[in-house]
Image (cartoon, rainbow, N blue to C red; front, side):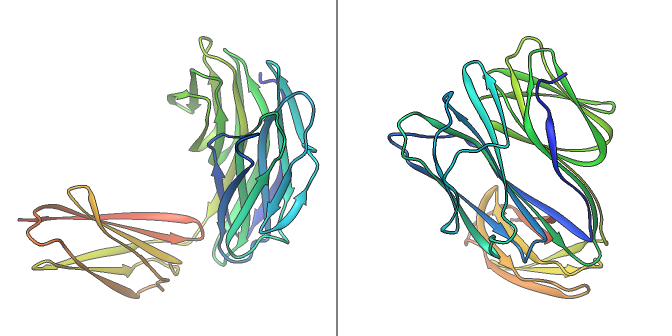
Length: 316
């Protein structure tokens, strides 16, 4: 059993969907580095938005400044949860930023003028949106769940699981999902995992490793209309025409196109929205006298859900 627990900070259902974005690279603030910035994007106006930070400090609390789009969230270091581990103090901070988040690009900044090191291990933003035709049941949990070598944590529920886990050096984490077992290595940075489960998802920190920490567990189950599209290619000389046809039941928010020759990207294009039964074309000029495999990868996006379609052709 893990020491400390994950705490549920929101749960329920929405006629819509959830979207989450994370920064998992540890940043150490102190005498040299005074600030760190995390840019995130919000599509439309969310019903709810939370931002969560996991930090590591010396034993005594220290002061910092948190800014969202030049609006100061707090000056004081008041965590929602704390844990002492091997002489280090770990903290989790949670803020409801629903009423100050902006549509489009948002800038979250942490500034610190102290001498003692302040480590930021994780910044996560989760938003809940309304969207016609979608229904999502969700459970959002966060905390500082410590797994010592040989210990495990059982995460119950059916649906899509999003996890953020951090190791203490060389860890081997075993993830048991029904009859499927996966082993993965953990380092000092946070790692993100996504699994679809139908019951209990078990995380086991192997005996030969070091301590591991589970910071996030988001569980979602979404019912959505059919999302589908087709990609047609037409090549004349060095001119490649890519045609996207929406064969699904919902309007695609956007479609991104990547064109690669022998694995090298030669063109990228972000297309706009596409209604059911509509089509849109994009023309690409391929490099002259370039032979080999052409891969066109189209990614359709709707309400945070992505569908990928690949098409190949040989240029001789």
